[in-house]
Image (tube, rainbow, N blue to C red):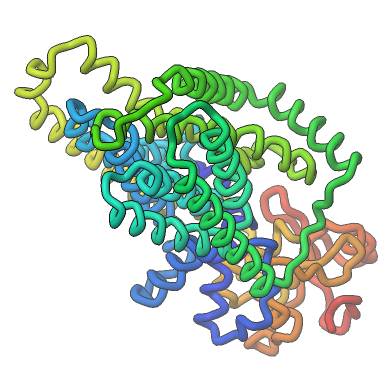
Length: 489
């Protein structure tokens, strides 16, 4: 049972950090990525890993999609209950939403093919998008709340979210701050009868708190990205994006559905009345919807332009950079369905069957999940990285040299018992998302061997007299300890 991209080198970053902490290695020597990923990624692994210290880090990693699906459900519930739901359908929507994204995420993860992985796979940057949904909900209340105290408390929480999310992940600036400031400018210069001072105050608060988080991010993270704005990177991104859309038809279809949905709801929101009675609950909810759909619309070009400018598009996995687009059907779909149902059918028809219907939904979802959970939690054993690690253990390998993508899984699957030293194509150390201690650490046993994978030019130039060994489709060589590696010290 494949687990999609859940076990690739990028996603298991917090797993390796937890492994090093448990092994007593100095985390201060860690070479980080351009993002901190404090919330919820690092917080989850350190928190749960401390409480459940007997569970292996890779097992905790397999539980992460369940946490992500649950957080998505709770966040979407908060968004719909506060921003999108009408009074007459609020109860029905609130009953449905907490279970729908959780069910979608879990059933998708335990399925044999991750057909809709672009929508629900909890990849890196997932926490930043959840912060976006919380942020836009708080912002809508700060703009339209009935009382001054309610608006002030929402604004204070909004500033805290902006500060922490920007400190954790730069993509929050891209997905929330820039398009939300554009939304406020739209409202400020549009025809809406908005309190202009309120808009200006929120504009300044979001700008300053996001900027403070960004500055703290730069202070706490010394890693530099290789992605720079250039014509070459722009052309490369456009070419790769075209290839992904041509070869991955399910992504193209899903993206078109999400784009049409976002654009249509944006223009629908613009047709709403330009004057609002802030004391009216219906008018307040209508205005919050308008704010949400304008932000959602502006987040799409903001993301697309900047991702292409920096040449970030690589392959189908790059869909994680476009979460504001790919999550639109989840945030909007159930709301549209409930609106259609309750505006076309009598509420009385659903009231009698509501409790039994949702009881059946909950039981069905949890029955599916519980039945498939044991197989899903052990499915990592079918991963090539896990199988390679078992081969290396059987050969008593203690030090492992390979490039980025094949180095990290070995460290995670072996719980650090095999020292992984990732290298560049020329054999020099590749110090990115790894610990400098890995280059200094010595294996526990003096009898352990040294192996190098043939995934770099440096390794492929090793003399043919040293026998080639294979594990599945992966080739490596066990070399003498006296073999002098350029990067060993």
